[in-house]
Image (tube, rainbow, N blue to C red; front, side, top):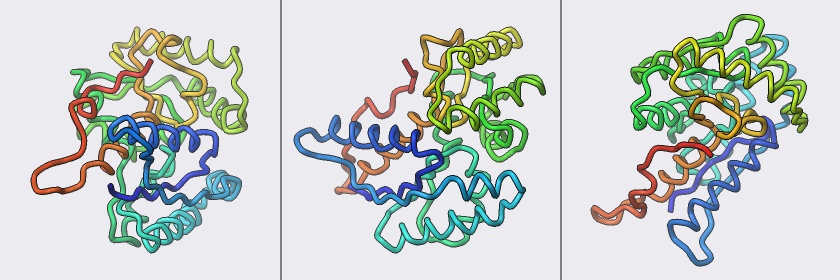
Length: 249
Protein backbone atom coordinates (compact mmCIF):
# COMPACT_ATOMS: atom_id res chain seq x y z
CA UNK A 1 0.00 0.00 0.00
CA UNK A 2 1.28 3.47 -0.85
CA UNK A 3 1.62 6.13 1.85
CA UNK A 4 -0.55 9.22 1.44
CA UNK A 5 0.90 12.60 2.40
CA UNK A 6 -2.13 14.59 3.57
CA UNK A 7 -1.89 18.36 4.02
CA UNK A 8 -4.84 19.20 6.27
CA UNK A 9 -6.20 21.92 8.52
CA UNK A 10 -7.90 24.04 5.82
CA UNK A 11 -10.18 23.71 7.74
CA UNK A 12 -9.70 20.89 10.23
CA UNK A 13 -13.43 20.03 10.05
CA UNK A 14 -13.13 18.84 6.46
CA UNK A 15 -9.80 17.13 7.18
CA UNK A 16 -11.68 14.80 9.52
CA UNK A 17 -13.79 13.69 6.56
CA UNK A 18 -10.66 12.93 4.51
CA UNK A 19 -9.19 10.86 7.32
CA UNK A 20 -12.40 8.89 7.82
CA UNK A 21 -12.95 8.17 4.11
CA UNK A 22 -9.34 7.13 3.50
CA UNK A 23 -9.52 4.57 6.29
CA UNK A 24 -13.01 3.33 5.44
CA UNK A 25 -12.09 2.79 1.80
CA UNK A 26 -8.99 0.79 2.70
CA UNK A 27 -10.77 -1.44 5.20
CA UNK A 28 -13.60 -1.91 2.69
CA UNK A 29 -11.10 -3.11 0.08
CA UNK A 30 -8.78 -5.18 2.28
CA UNK A 31 -10.92 -6.05 5.31
CA UNK A 32 -9.69 -7.19 8.69
CA UNK A 33 -7.64 -4.75 10.71
CA UNK A 34 -6.36 -2.79 7.73
CA UNK A 35 -6.24 1.00 7.72
CA UNK A 36 -4.79 3.66 5.45
CA UNK A 37 -1.12 4.59 5.59
CA UNK A 38 -1.25 8.35 6.10
CA UNK A 39 1.32 10.96 6.96
CA UNK A 40 -0.47 14.21 7.85
CA UNK A 41 0.78 17.76 8.21
CA UNK A 42 -1.94 19.94 9.73
CA UNK A 43 -1.36 23.63 8.99
CA UNK A 44 -2.60 26.53 11.10
CA UNK A 45 -5.44 27.83 8.91
CA UNK A 46 -5.39 31.23 10.60
CA UNK A 47 -2.01 31.93 8.98
CA UNK A 48 -3.22 30.92 5.54
CA UNK A 49 -6.51 32.82 5.84
CA UNK A 50 -4.59 35.99 6.81
CA UNK A 51 -2.39 35.58 3.74
CA UNK A 52 -5.42 35.06 1.50
CA UNK A 53 -7.10 38.16 2.87
CA UNK A 54 -4.00 40.26 2.21
CA UNK A 55 -3.27 38.71 -1.19
CA UNK A 56 -0.05 37.11 0.04
CA UNK A 57 -0.32 33.92 -1.98
CA UNK A 58 3.45 33.53 -2.08
CA UNK A 59 3.35 33.26 1.71
CA UNK A 60 0.86 30.43 1.46
CA UNK A 61 2.94 28.75 -1.24
CA UNK A 62 5.90 28.74 1.15
CA UNK A 63 3.81 27.23 3.97
CA UNK A 64 2.34 24.48 1.82
CA UNK A 65 5.60 23.75 0.00
CA UNK A 66 7.28 23.29 3.38
CA UNK A 67 4.49 20.93 4.44
CA UNK A 68 4.80 18.94 1.21
CA UNK A 69 8.59 18.68 1.53
CA UNK A 70 8.26 17.44 5.12
CA UNK A 71 5.78 14.77 4.03
CA UNK A 72 8.00 13.74 1.13
CA UNK A 73 10.97 13.51 3.45
CA UNK A 74 8.97 11.38 5.87
CA UNK A 75 8.17 8.85 3.13
CA UNK A 76 4.91 9.91 1.48
CA UNK A 77 4.40 8.51 -2.03
CA UNK A 78 2.05 11.28 -3.18
CA UNK A 79 0.46 14.44 -1.79
CA UNK A 80 -3.22 15.20 -1.15
CA UNK A 81 -4.08 18.83 -0.35
CA UNK A 82 -7.34 18.73 1.63
CA UNK A 83 -8.86 21.90 0.21
CA UNK A 84 -9.90 23.26 -3.18
CA UNK A 85 -8.69 26.85 -2.88
CA UNK A 86 -5.06 26.02 -2.14
CA UNK A 87 -4.84 24.05 -5.39
CA UNK A 88 -4.20 27.49 -6.86
CA UNK A 89 -0.66 26.96 -5.57
CA UNK A 90 -0.08 23.45 -6.96
CA UNK A 91 2.32 24.64 -9.72
CA UNK A 92 4.52 26.34 -7.12
CA UNK A 93 4.41 23.39 -4.71
CA UNK A 94 5.23 20.90 -7.47
CA UNK A 95 8.50 22.72 -8.14
CA UNK A 96 9.64 21.97 -4.59
CA UNK A 97 8.97 18.20 -4.48
CA UNK A 98 9.59 15.11 -6.58
CA UNK A 99 6.46 13.13 -5.67
CA UNK A 100 3.13 13.81 -7.44
CA UNK A 101 0.15 15.81 -6.17
CA UNK A 102 -3.31 14.29 -6.69
CA UNK A 103 -5.25 17.29 -8.03
CA UNK A 104 -8.77 17.67 -6.67
CA UNK A 105 -10.14 19.01 -9.97
CA UNK A 106 -8.77 16.08 -11.97
CA UNK A 107 -10.43 13.59 -9.64
CA UNK A 108 -13.71 15.53 -9.74
CA UNK A 109 -13.76 15.91 -13.52
CA UNK A 110 -13.20 12.17 -13.93
CA UNK A 111 -16.17 11.36 -11.67
CA UNK A 112 -18.44 13.80 -13.53
CA UNK A 113 -17.45 12.55 -16.98
CA UNK A 114 -18.19 8.97 -15.94
CA UNK A 115 -21.78 10.08 -15.36
CA UNK A 116 -21.98 11.61 -18.85
CA UNK A 117 -22.53 15.15 -17.57
CA UNK A 118 -21.29 17.99 -19.78
CA UNK A 119 -22.54 21.15 -18.02
CA UNK A 120 -21.88 21.56 -14.32
CA UNK A 121 -22.37 24.28 -11.68
CA UNK A 122 -19.46 25.20 -9.43
CA UNK A 123 -19.80 26.42 -5.84
CA UNK A 124 -16.76 27.25 -3.71
CA UNK A 125 -14.79 30.12 -2.28
CA UNK A 126 -14.69 33.33 -4.25
CA UNK A 127 -11.16 32.43 -5.32
CA UNK A 128 -12.27 29.04 -6.66
CA UNK A 129 -15.29 30.42 -8.49
CA UNK A 130 -13.72 33.54 -10.04
CA UNK A 131 -10.17 32.36 -10.77
CA UNK A 132 -9.12 29.67 -13.23
CA UNK A 133 -7.08 27.11 -11.29
CA UNK A 134 -10.08 24.76 -10.88
CA UNK A 135 -12.20 25.89 -13.84
CA UNK A 136 -9.41 25.39 -16.37
CA UNK A 137 -8.95 21.77 -15.26
CA UNK A 138 -12.69 21.15 -15.58
CA UNK A 139 -12.84 22.80 -18.99
CA UNK A 140 -9.82 20.82 -20.18
CA UNK A 141 -11.81 17.69 -19.34
CA UNK A 142 -14.58 18.86 -21.67
CA UNK A 143 -16.94 20.32 -19.07
CA UNK A 144 -18.86 23.58 -19.32
CA UNK A 145 -18.80 25.41 -15.98
CA UNK A 146 -21.66 27.59 -14.71
CA UNK A 147 -21.32 30.04 -11.81
CA UNK A 148 -23.76 31.94 -9.58
CA UNK A 149 -24.30 35.67 -10.09
CA UNK A 150 -21.93 38.16 -8.49
CA UNK A 151 -23.98 38.71 -5.32
CA UNK A 152 -24.46 35.01 -4.81
CA UNK A 153 -20.74 34.38 -5.27
CA UNK A 154 -20.21 36.70 -2.30
CA UNK A 155 -22.92 34.91 -0.31
CA UNK A 156 -21.47 31.45 -0.97
CA UNK A 157 -18.01 32.70 0.01
CA UNK A 158 -19.24 34.40 3.20
CA UNK A 159 -21.02 31.25 4.38
CA UNK A 160 -17.83 29.24 3.87
CA UNK A 161 -15.51 31.54 5.80
CA UNK A 162 -17.87 33.01 8.40
CA UNK A 163 -19.83 29.85 9.19
CA UNK A 164 -18.63 26.50 7.85
CA UNK A 165 -14.92 27.01 8.54
CA UNK A 166 -15.93 27.83 12.11
CA UNK A 167 -18.08 24.73 12.42
CA UNK A 168 -21.42 26.57 12.09
CA UNK A 169 -24.09 24.86 9.96
CA UNK A 170 -27.21 27.05 9.62
CA UNK A 171 -30.52 26.10 8.04
CA UNK A 172 -30.90 29.63 6.68
CA UNK A 173 -27.64 29.25 4.74
CA UNK A 174 -28.70 25.84 3.46
CA UNK A 175 -31.86 27.42 2.04
CA UNK A 176 -29.77 30.09 0.29
CA UNK A 177 -27.51 27.47 -1.25
CA UNK A 178 -30.58 25.52 -2.37
CA UNK A 179 -31.94 28.66 -4.03
CA UNK A 180 -28.64 29.15 -5.87
CA UNK A 181 -28.54 25.51 -6.99
CA UNK A 182 -32.11 25.80 -8.28
CA UNK A 183 -31.14 28.91 -10.26
CA UNK A 184 -28.13 27.16 -11.79
CA UNK A 185 -30.33 24.22 -12.74
CA UNK A 186 -32.58 26.67 -14.61
CA UNK A 187 -29.47 27.88 -16.46
CA UNK A 188 -28.82 24.36 -17.72
CA UNK A 189 -26.56 22.81 -15.10
CA UNK A 190 -26.80 19.01 -15.01
CA UNK A 191 -24.89 18.63 -11.74
CA UNK A 192 -23.33 20.78 -9.02
CA UNK A 193 -19.76 20.62 -7.74
CA UNK A 194 -19.32 21.33 -4.05
CA UNK A 195 -15.98 22.95 -4.79
CA UNK A 196 -15.05 23.73 -1.21
CA UNK A 197 -14.25 20.95 1.22
CA UNK A 198 -16.61 22.43 3.85
CA UNK A 199 -19.77 22.71 1.72
CA UNK A 200 -20.57 19.04 2.27
CA UNK A 201 -21.30 19.95 5.89
CA UNK A 202 -24.23 22.02 4.59
CA UNK A 203 -25.42 20.40 1.34
CA UNK A 204 -25.98 16.70 0.71
CA UNK A 205 -27.75 14.98 -2.14
CA UNK A 206 -31.11 15.16 -0.37
CA UNK A 207 -30.75 18.96 -0.22
CA UNK A 208 -30.10 19.45 -3.93
CA UNK A 209 -32.22 19.45 -7.09
CA UNK A 210 -29.06 18.52 -9.01
CA UNK A 211 -26.72 15.54 -8.70
CA UNK A 212 -24.10 16.54 -6.14
CA UNK A 213 -20.35 16.07 -6.65
CA UNK A 214 -18.67 16.63 -3.29
CA UNK A 215 -14.99 17.23 -4.00
CA UNK A 216 -13.97 16.16 -0.49
CA UNK A 217 -15.48 12.69 -0.90
CA UNK A 218 -14.38 12.28 -4.52
CA UNK A 219 -10.80 13.40 -3.77
CA UNK A 220 -10.45 11.18 -0.70
CA UNK A 221 -11.87 8.12 -2.50
CA UNK A 222 -9.49 8.66 -5.42
CA UNK A 223 -6.56 8.99 -3.01
CA UNK A 224 -7.48 5.69 -1.37
CA UNK A 225 -7.80 4.04 -4.79
CA UNK A 226 -4.33 5.23 -5.78
CA UNK A 227 -2.84 4.13 -2.47
CA UNK A 228 -4.22 0.63 -3.04
CA UNK A 229 -3.07 0.47 -6.66
CA UNK A 230 0.36 -0.96 -6.02
CA UNK A 231 2.27 -3.11 -8.48
CA UNK A 232 2.33 -6.87 -7.97
CA UNK A 233 3.16 -8.16 -11.42
CA UNK A 234 0.11 -6.97 -13.35
CA UNK A 235 -2.28 -7.21 -10.39
CA UNK A 236 -3.74 -4.16 -8.61
CA UNK A 237 -5.46 -4.32 -5.25
CA UNK A 238 -8.80 -2.69 -6.00
CA UNK A 239 -11.97 -3.81 -7.70
CA UNK A 240 -14.74 -2.43 -9.87
CA UNK A 241 -16.24 -0.46 -7.00
CA UNK A 242 -13.42 2.06 -7.25
CA UNK A 243 -14.12 2.69 -10.92
CA UNK A 244 -17.82 3.48 -10.49
CA UNK A 245 -19.21 7.03 -10.70
CA UNK A 246 -19.17 8.82 -7.37
CA UNK A 247 -22.72 10.01 -6.77
CA UNK A 248 -23.04 11.52 -3.34
CA UNK A 249 -26.01 10.68 -1.13
